[in-house]
Image (cartoon, rainbow, N blue to C red; front, side):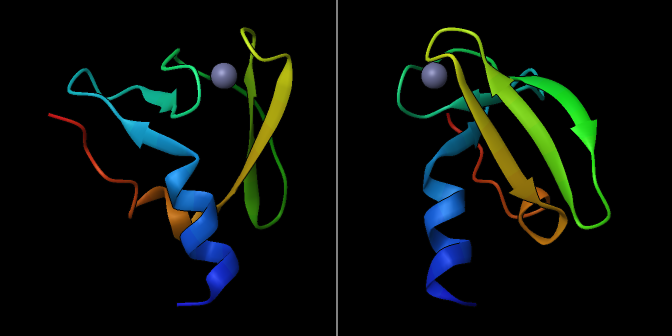
Length: 64
Ligand SMILES: [Zn+2]
């Protein structure tokens, strides 16, 4: 695992409802689109795009 992949994972977490949330603000991020090797999420609260490589999606930690 590269350092950049680890960094991506700490920016988000998966809630018990299955939604992906932004770690910085705790709000759910919305899926905006998909590219060849990553999904583009967007946080309305931070007004910031959050691209996540596909290899990261399955490794997102679940918050309890
Ligand atoms: Zn946010």
